[in-house]
Length: 254
Image (tube, rainbow, N blue to C red; front, side):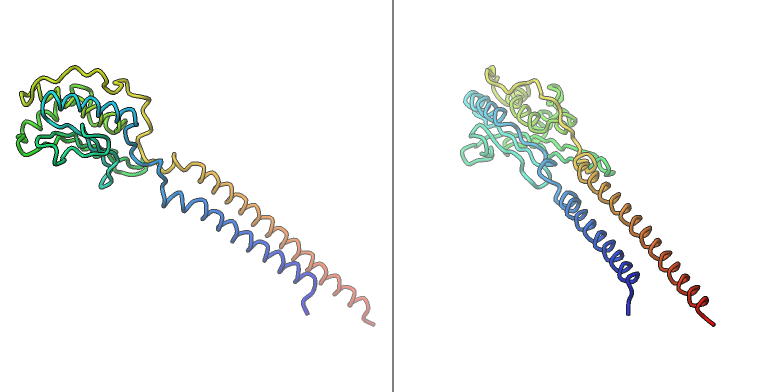
């Protein structure tokens, strides 16, 4: 029949096992959703409501003066982040109501700093079939004169996309593709707000989870150590008890 020492040994081992199981369950619950879900904070941000509203107003006046529809489209991979035109926020420019149209298309991708890939932006100017591709390419190159290069689209994609749409009427007029555009009186604020962090950095965005994991693992190590120390003491106590009983038996022999 198992004695008190065996019972204590079994109880200690069971406590350590359950502690390990619970710790790893908590770790998985904290880390896995953060790593695999990613959260919405990592998505490329859309233009603000003010930027979209002001841009639509400017494009409406340009369309009335030049007879050309203007718009924008911001995407992250295959996901459309924002689209709009002189027809309104959320309405694409290639609408049946627009026979001639031009739009800026920006596809921005943010990647983790731990990844070998870099953040990048693909910006192009698209137009209806009556516009020559060479002319549209020249208009596209003209965006850099307004400080709208790839780095700005990466750092502030929403603002840069709507800003590019606003300067399209001017660039087309310079190319001789449209009449001079009217002076904009409600253009989006040209002073860009503070630039956000551009990378989808797993360590930066999820540092809280990893701190929690480190703490839980430290607790696990401490509990393991305590369990093994207690188990060693119990073994030594049991061995001393067995030795003591052996000495008493020897003394009782005739």
